[in-house]
Image 1 (cartoon, rainbow, N blue to C red):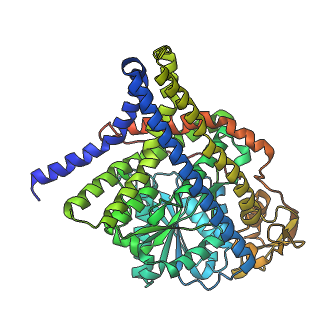
Image 2: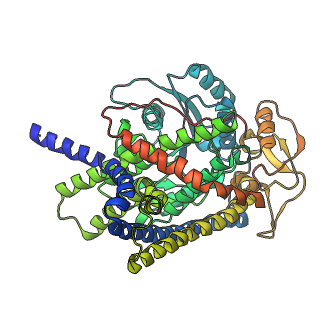
Length: 581
């Protein structure tokens, strides 16, 4: 390859990096100068943007309701069938990257996995620590001592700090941990790569056993299980009542966005924070990228799998929610700020737009006569990328400033011009109509959240439970003192369905289980619903304008601007969480 060719490729990639920042700057400038310099064109532009946003929002609402329907059906089907999960066809490798996470959170994550039937025979835990964390050796060793006996294998890795060319973050840690795990499991223990399924888990992820069951079923029916990324929805139902309403409602909208994305067509969707794929696929694409442009590791890995397999890799939704914790600090204001910091880091994933454009351009240059279906797939993928990253930095400003600046800076510009006066009225009407899909999403979400909480996360919220040593593989098993009944299915909950659904959620339950995992006892305790949705939660949505600006438009804009600074490295900061749910 000649120097001129390399230079051209580098220039094209750098040009793509300017796309989102340029769009963001342009939208702000147009909102301010448009009403003064070209008001008529400004109104027409806003009308196009508002109509596009409204149509897109309607599509998102339909897709969200589709995903919600499948989630409910999956949970209720599991309740009826009560399938066993002990005969797993694959070995499941859970990679848990963590950095300065409270040890209590990690214990609860491991405890939930330990309660799954088949964990001792089929689960491998990879606790991916960071070498730069003070005390990481002691923390990892303590967790391994406490939990290793409940799994097939338990290993701890320590990602070295300051490796050349790496950006510190989840992606680089996962890359190091999976490579090391692959070497140990395949070369040292003789395990078959085709039999290994990776699940990348957040440190605070509560993964129901039903999720693993669904992975197994989808691996069997997938067109190519070794070219598939499995994407679950995410919920924030563990400490949601302990955080400010602005934080709570932000994470609800984040969940809705993830869920509507799971109904994208052609298998072109993106995982969010937790996902699964075969070790074969990870090895085929040379594992995870580790530079700063790949800091949004979940979306980036899906893009990498798609492009590195020539567009063959696809994503499949797994309709079993993963339960996460909201960002939580030690005070109201510090929690509000911590959520802003988390949002800023999320939007560093804007670099994936440049990556997707660059890879699409390169694939076209290599094969200019690709099929129409392949070209359409790439266009769909790029469109969904723009949905994720262009809307916050462009439409956000247009919706906030567009009409406001016109009425503030040039309020009488259309006096006597009936045509444009009417257009401004139409603009206001469309602006109001654009909120209807969001209201629809809120109503659907509240119903879905109640169902998921009561039937998947906390089905024992009415009654009491006991913990004893009769569980599978010697794991303390949760048992109710009286038989519970699900009104939605008119069926009694059995122990097998309870375990499969991952019913290990409430605060008291976790505390008792952590103790009895070392000193088994049998005790009965009342339990409550830690995040029960009530009418007061509807008042949370009054915070939506604040949340939309401070947790989406502003951090996405600032993060995109930072991409203009060459060789910029950001301090590695993880979202603050408390040790208790």
